[in-house]
Length: 420
Image (tube, helix red, strand yellow):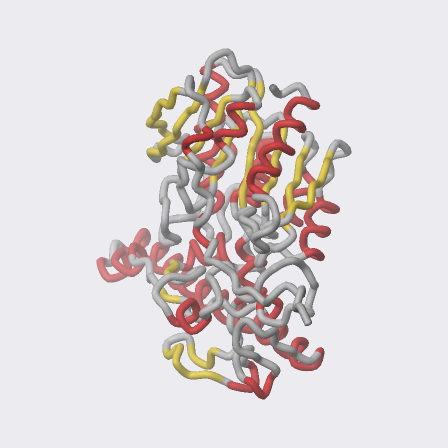
């Protein structure tokens, strides 16, 4: 008897834009790349890289709030489609200590101002993964009158969006865009943590990795009950709220010290007003849907964006939200305070939108892709479902490379909308 069934597979690591590198052989021979040092409206330095072949009217702009990937896999296809490509970094690439999504909007705005002054007639924002919610957030704020924009970040920091030049884009391309960092963490944070200061303690009744709760070793699928999942999801929200409370308490103490220092000149108060606690958030890779493949069935393999070894990703030094400040936690990772959520911002997107969903994504599940697409207000929106993991690489080796298919779909959309 011949076994023709597809063997269970485990996920490869795609977090941090791993697996998004281009094949340099596909770059057009006549492309030229220039680097540009920009200054934001609040005087922060940012860097952008412009790819051109000459004569392009439209530039597609790629930016992620935290990652910087100049060799992104879509660049060759975009250039072949007849548009220029702008890849920009935020002011604090690679970490969450300084990142606040509100400030990242000023970073993106600096790039948009530069590109308009350079003579491009149209700009299209392209958001991959966490770049999608950032693009949606930019669309929302740039569409508002300056005085109506957000004045402060969730941590209370003045932003300066009301005085910044924020040219609205002409189109939006979303590729494997998730619901936002806050919602992503709400779904994958481990609720069995008992004490944030001692992450080795666990409440095993809330562990997705306890066999008695339905866990199975990879690549076999786990099987959780509805009762366990209901309790699990509620405990995840409780853990987020506890960290929220710590962050808000820290900021309230800092604000009170600042007020006291101004009134009295007290040195101890001045020190406390300047002090920003940096804290760790452990065990943030435990979304049950990544281990129980019967939940929201898709083409995905067993595991998460960090692979299939959750001992390493939960307890290791690298992971989502691992090192934060109160300000960065509230702006980036709190599902209850972050402004950069797709469902909050997508109703403000009125530009033409192309959304590409990979059917084996471990961080954007079918119901979430539906929620994102339905939230987009634009009457001119299209959606493509392509086989692949979070960054389009085939999960089954006999399937085509989804990155190539995504590039083809984008090229067609750009042509149909007269961007190229």
